[in-house]
Amino acid sequence: MIKLVVRAALLLLITVQILTACSKDSSSITKSIKYENEKNNFSLTLPSKWLDNYEVVELKHENVMAFRFITKVGKGELFRIEVWPKDQWETEGIELTKIIHISKIGELGNIVYAFDTPTDVQYDPNNQEDKEQYTLLDKDIEQIKVSFEVKK
Image (cartoon, rainbow, N blue to C red; front, side, top):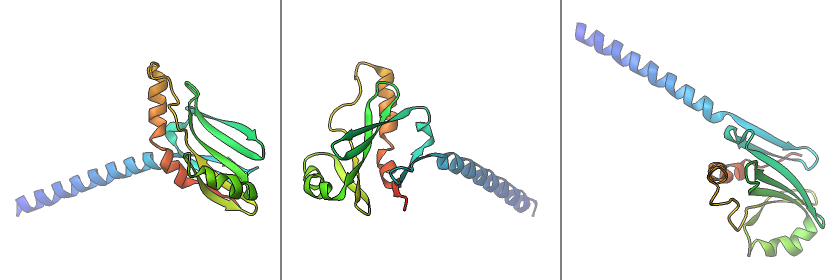
């Protein structure tokens, strides 16, 4: 009888420790940074490790507005969100999807949102700090792409 009570107490203690560890891990995973672009009606969720490791540079080419997400070290482009007029996307953008890493990720009225990733190396392979930061952030790009939301 004593062995059974000791085993039950031990099992209870182990269960509490496992549940406590799991709750600590999940809270650190859920920390994130919300990037909101109110002018262009979209948002993204970035992992917390991106804090202080990236910048957003705005570029305009013809009628397309691009928001380049780049590393602070080395200034390598990780990805960009592009805001296209719908008619221009239909005449030029769709064709681009066949030749570069660009895809439509949203639409609002007469606007198309596209997600674009570089086609070349964006860091100096001889600069270890630049390479490490780029590699660290690059792992999250697909997760960030999925987090894209159009704000209506």
